[in-house]
Length: 366
Ligand code: KG4
Ligand code: ZN
Image 1 (cartoon, protein in one colour):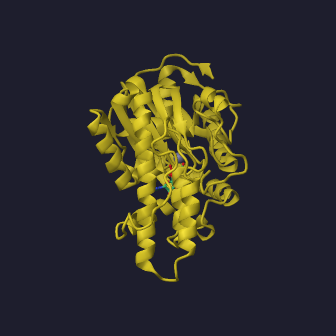
Image 2 (spheres, protein in one colour):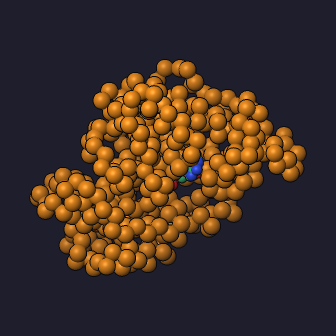
């Protein structure tokens, strides 16, 4: 990373996101710390991966190659902008499926090189961490639960580039567990919204499923045991059995919510000043019952609760453009040889001290 010269207060940045199964481009204007989403285009590959019940990396990378140029052109056209109107280009440089990351990062580099613009190589997780600031002003520090298909962690977000990981899943991400539960219940992909829908008609007390780490110190999480127990219960169901399936979906979701709420209470105890604001981001933050429980927790402790609009919870390029604009404002840009990185922890020190990645494990969106 190199320090660039201080820029004018109003910056317009193109963001590019291709780390998983969304091909996305967006333009964000940052004016005196206030973000305006000028355009926000997301082309989802969900249908291409649906037959496989999870994201197939090779299909994802090829699809990004096919779609990205058009998605960028659409984002620029919707904003009524030409490349000459941009102050910089931000592209996700990891972590993610490496083929897709390379497609987006190379494209960002090409635009930066051709137009003489600064490049910001963005950590996808930093994009999620800052995403709540797209919707409304949100001052640092805050406590963030980042829960998506590939990640599940509590972070104290202390400032731009200053993230303290307080705890994380020791096995599967919560979204991965939702996707798996949906698969065994025959609910389709992606799993989260399908499980939430099915759970509305179900009895959450019907199946007593495991709640790992509940009541224990710290804020690490585990969902592998719950995933396996849900799978066993689903396999024991007779064909059809719609009510049983709804009950199992509801029981599964209740277990996830119980675990996350219990861990979030401890995370608030550990977060210091950041505990004044509890924020959720990542695809799983779209879950209604989870939001409601965390909102109640925050309010019981006199903390603010922030949940970005759903379109900023799931993968998008506006959060990448915002991270890029904030970095550009702070004078941080990257060289054109910035690498694409399959793994890239936000808090490198915590990741080195307590690695949580289990080699070989692949979630739907890991
Ligand atoms: O952040 P995201 O779009 O992609 C990454 O993983 O980076 O998150 C997608 C994940 C999927 O696992 C999906 O099943 C989950 O978020 N998800 C949900 C809901 N909507 C999406 N999980 C629970 N309830 C939902 N309503
Ligand atoms: Zn994501």
